[in-house]
Length: 192
Image (cartoon, rainbow, N blue to C red; front, side, top):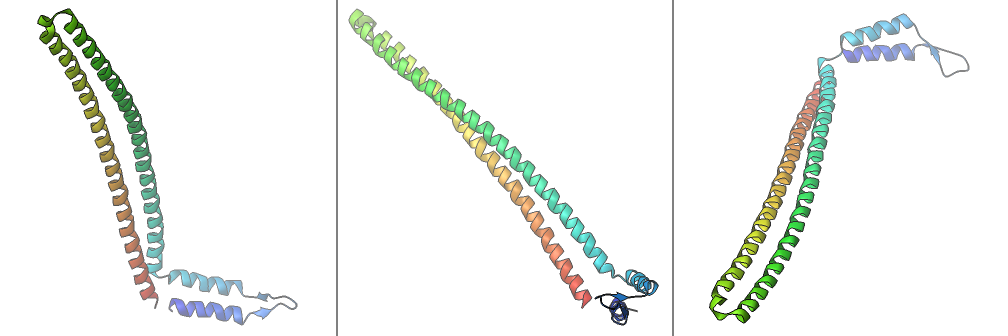
């Protein structure tokens, strides 16, 4: 006997049951109903069991994907905070470098003036020293700016990688959802 016939039989038992007076209830033979239910369980289609397994598996995979995405986002957030802190350090270093360059410029002007006043013979030597101070300060500032640039590029790469991981997890979840939808169609076709 197929599943539909068993369901029809169960409906027939309920329809033909004796009605309880003054109530919207009826009396049925419990053993007869249990017998039909047991037969329904025996004829329960394998596809429905598989569909239930697929549904549970889908929920498990989605939960895992959500947890993984949350972990990636948390890691990315921590890295962004770290990079912001590093950017703040770079900003402070740049300010310090600018201050050093200004001080070097002032010192160079002062040294230059003293050299001019003191003796023309020593002018070239003093000018070279002043220029060297300025060059060293500029190199220091350039080094700090290069470090800042590297930190910013590193931050971009980390964010790009985090985005790529989240996108890959999303694609895997989409693929799984497509497979689940396909399985549902197969199950629905089998029912018909």
